[in-house]
Amino acid sequence: MVGRVIQGRYKLIDERGSGSMASVFIARDLQTNRLYAIKVLSRKATTDAELIQRFRREFELLKQISGAHVIQPIAWGDDQDIYFIVMDYVDGHTLKQIVEQKGAIDPRRAINIIVQAADGLYSAASKGIVHRDIKPQNIMLTTDNVVKLTDFGLARSESTAPITVSNVFLGTPYYVSPEQADNGRIADTRSDLYSLACVFFELVSGKVPYDGETAVDVVVQHMRNPPPSVCAINPSLPLMYDAFIRKGMAKRPQERFQTIQEFVDGLSTLLEATPENTLPPPRDTGRQIPRFVSPISGQTFQILKPELIIGRSDPNKGIFPDIDLIALDVHHTVSRRHVHLSIREERYFVEDLGAFNKTYINGVPLMPNQPQELREGDTLRLGNVDLRFEIRAS
Image 1: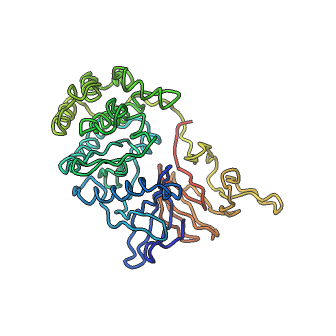
Image 2: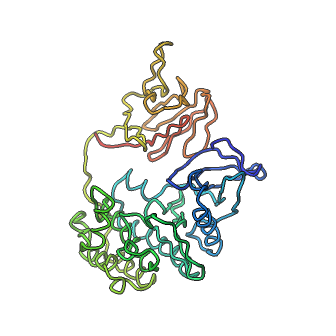
Image 3: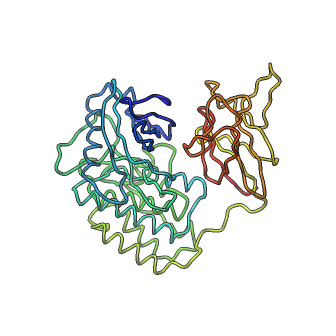
C-alpha cells in the first residue's frame, strides 16, 4: 500500500501500525502538501458488510465529537474497494510505546495524561458515545504533551442502532471491564473509566493490572480477582493510590466513580498528595548502551562503536554491514549499505546513503547524505524494517 495514491489525492508514504481489521498510514495530501493519518480497512474485512458498516460508523461518531483530546476526522471514502478514514496527523507516541520504552513514568505526569484522556472521554460521553476500547495503544501523547484519544472502531452511541459482529470479542483483555467482557452492549462511560483506571495503573507501575498465559486467563481475573496493589509494585506511591485503583476498578459499575468529573476529582486528590520524583528505583544501573530494537521480533542490535553501517549483507559481493538486517528483511527492501550512524558528543546521527527505499525517522523521510539527529524512542524505518532506538543500562 505504501506509495499508493487514494482518490487521486492522498499518497500513502509510511505505515504506522496495523491490526487484524485495519492499518494506519501517514499520507501526504497532494493538493495541500499536508500530512494526514489514514486508517485503511483490511482486504479481509472488506468482504464483511457488517465490518464495513462499523468502519463507516466510526467516522460518523468521530464527526459528532469536538474536543482537544480526541483525534479529528477529515473524510471517509471508498476507492476501488479500499475503505478509508482520513484523520488529523498526530506527531507523537502511544502510551504503550512510552511504557515499553521507559517503564513506569512519574506519577504527576501520569495524572496529567489521564486527566487529559478523561477530558477526551467527556467529549465523547457528552454526545452519548462510549469508546469501549480504551487502552494505552489508543491514547497518543503528542510531542507537545497533548493527549489524543484514537481508534473509535468499537465505539457505540446511545442514539444509533447497535451493530453486532459475530464471534468478535469487544475490547482488549488487559483493560476490559467485567461487564463489557460479559456483554459489550451494556458497557457505559463507567466501563471506559474502568479501562482508563487500568491504563493509569500501568503508567505508574510499568505493569498491567492482570496478566496470564491466555486472553481468557486475563479476562477471568478482571471479572473475579480484586484489583492488585499498585503501591506494592511502586512503594514510593502514597497509599491512597491503592484506594483510587480499588474504586476505579471495582467489579460492579455502581461501586466505581460514577461520573468523569468524580474520576478527575479523585486524580486531583492524588496529585495533591504526590511528591516530586516518585518513580520506582531503576531496575538496572551502569554504563548506557544504545541499541536498536525490532518492535515485531524483539531482536536487538547494540551500538558498540562510534561509526557503523546499517544494511543487508550480501556474501556474494563481500558486503557485511555492522548491523545486518537480513533476518528481518523478508522482501529485501533494505539496501546493502542503507544508512550510516555516527556518535558525536553523546548525540546520535543517521545519514541515508542513497538507499533505493528511503529512510524515515518517525515517518518523516530523510534526504540522502544529510545527517539527522536520532533521539531515544525514535523509530527508524529502512525499507519495510522498523527499528526503535533505545538507550538502556548495561
